[in-house]
Length: 201
Image (cartoon, rainbow, N blue to C red; front, top):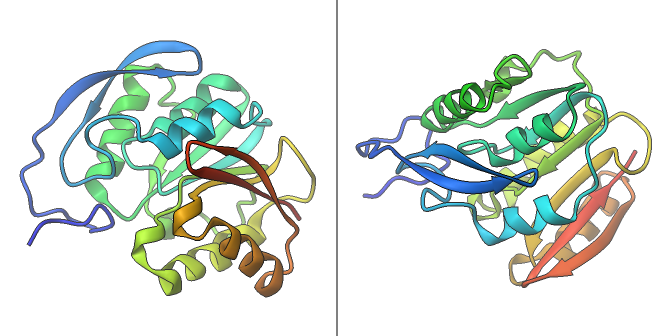
């Protein structure tokens, strides 16, 4: 059976390689591997998110489901006063995110950790995510119940910015957040089949 990218310990060989991607307006060389999300490069949804979301605020920021790190790295590059928590259950992804942060000279501002390694008292000025829709609604909803209430109050550029395919339920997810978590959620940019949701407290 092939690994899912949300497997904690992928069984497949890592097959590491480097690729060139544009992050924060700069071409950079980063390391990727099999057994993590989008090992072939920057996926379309993440590209839409990074192109459309305003520069992040200072303070503690969260990349939920960081993979090999493109969102967390962009946050760190776009605001030198940011302290980014790159969270994933996949330990191979976390290792890649750490190595890539080191490559870009932001290892002191990007912590790649499992969810349980984030201290309970940390709150976030902003959350950026291409959330793992394919884990299923129950797991996804549990993730959002855990992390969205830890946002600091305030509007853009703070709040949660999430990119979701319109075909995979972006509008129904927005309604769920508003109904179940009582958090205002705006459907902002639509591009290339994806919608960006902005949730605030």
